[in-house]
Length: 67
Image (tube, rainbow, N blue to C red; front, side, top):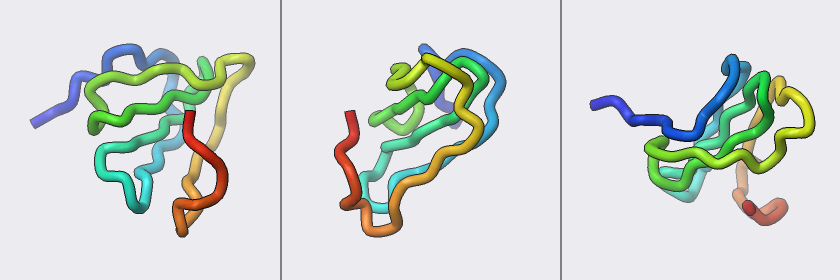
């Protein structure tokens, strides 16, 4: 089964899955940083001021709050 990835724009440069929150995925693209909390069905841009070239979650999942 393939996710829809609605709302995702730009060329993909990086992908990261949250280590503790199932279904939470962040993607770095040429259009900015995107976040999905539904396994990749729908993404929303959390930072689109410039291209995002890499993305990662902290391994303990505790550093910073997700928007």
